[in-house]
Amino acid sequence: MFVLIIDGDTHITVSKNGIKIEELIKRMERAKVDKAITWLQPVYSTEEELVDSNQYVYEAMKKYPNKIFGFGWVDPNFGVDKSKDLVKKLVYDYGFYGVKLNGAQNNFYIDDPKISLPIVETIVKTGKILAFHIGGDACDRTHPFRLARIAQRFPEAKILMVHMGGAAFNDLSHAAIEVAEKYQNIILIGSAIRDISIFNALKIIGSKRVCFGSDTPFAFMHVEVAKYQALLSDFPEDDQQNVMAGNLIELLKL
View 1: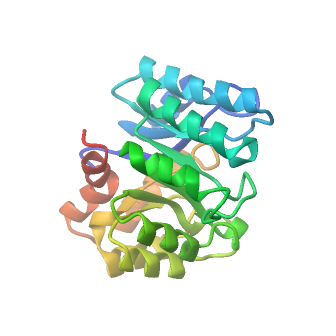
View 2 (view 1 turned 120 degrees about the horizontal axis):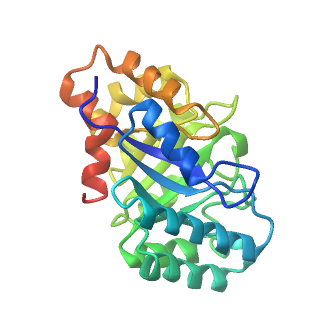
């Protein structure tokens, strides 16, 4: 059994089309997960709903300050300047640990010099963590090689590569691992990805930059914990704890 578990990828929403914070806490208790990085579940359709959803994550973090580590979410489709202003609100007013961008859900290229990079730069200047959906569900828009350009451009930034090229039948994990091997400021969140891909990442880049993530509610948290328990059983105890909690403890400066 693991000493401590931090889930690096969970979602909640104020909408009826997803799970509320109480359900997330219930799933954490069942899976024996102690803490979680939490961002909104992207079921919004308007700018107002996006703002309300971010606020709901903030309220959840206030209600469960020792369990929920809130991250913001910005959508360039509502305007670059508005997104930059929202970043400042999410970081300075809400105290979020970082901000996430999802080029698959929101239909943009994550390294677009006009749409995305100005927002990325704003996040980096706050000193907070960058998080990106990197998955095979939008191979072109969220390819690991696009994240490599961002990591190279902002070497001072800590970057979460969420899904490490998974999240679909198209598996980009080989490219994800190659990019992470080259850029030390990238941390892999192994959610919505095959166990063999996580194993390969551990063998190639080591346990210090690979983190557990469940992608709740899109996967069952207790099942994902069991998968990691089986996967890590042949690894040294220090490696196990790095993956399940230690890396995120260090990254989040807990």
